[in-house]
Figure 1 (cartoon, rainbow, N blue to C red):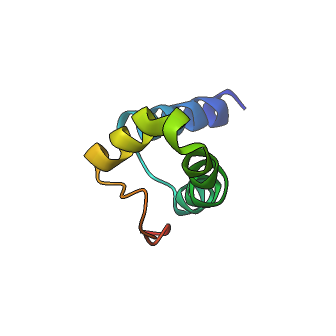
Figure 2 (tube, one colour; figure 1 turned 135 degrees about the horizontal axis):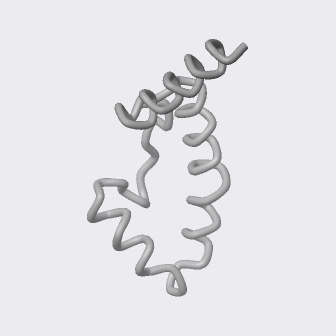
Length: 70
């Protein structure tokens, strides 16, 4: 039992250090962003201009559709 726990803890630590990206996690985050957060921010326009400006500087064109699964 201790060995399995130690192995699982080591795997979680290694994944965090190596910044492992899980496909399902990426899909879920993309859906949340493109269906929930992005429309919310764009609807508020002037109130969220700082967020929109930051997205544009990061390469997230806030006015064009991008494939959320890339």
